[in-house]
Amino acid sequence: MTHAGQFETGDVAFSNTGMSLLQDVYDETAAYKAQFGYSPSSVSGLTSTSVANSFGAITPAWVQGLKDATGSMPYAVGGSANTGLIPININSTRDALIQAYPWNAATFRGLPANYNIRTLQGIYYKR
Image (tube, rainbow, N blue to C red; front, side, top):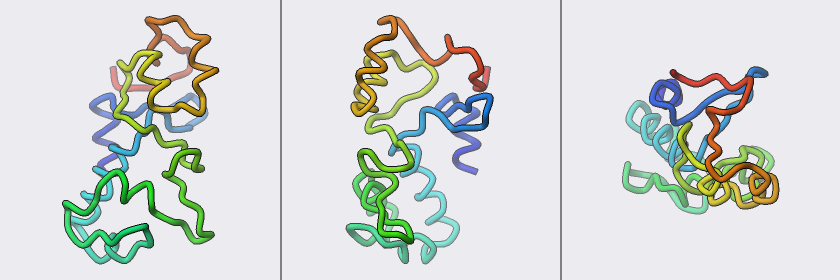
């Protein structure tokens, strides 16, 4: 439900192929806090670099330290979830995208300085 709300506010978007875009570690932190509110044990039992036994313990660092069943950390820098490091949304500029996804900086530097996700074809976001 949290991610649906984030879509409604423009914090996340989707490509026309269904791939999520603009997710950042703060979006994930909010979602895990909501999950904790519903079922604390479903979050406190997750494997991370620290234990989340309160809302305050669910931080971006805790999310980045989460491990999946294979031991990988999907939300860490370069992880499979491709999660941004700073808050971004449909209004984020090219420079903000570079800060959020430094591993893709070379790709973003090729975009116009006034670029934002709204200018792309095939992107679905709340209008």
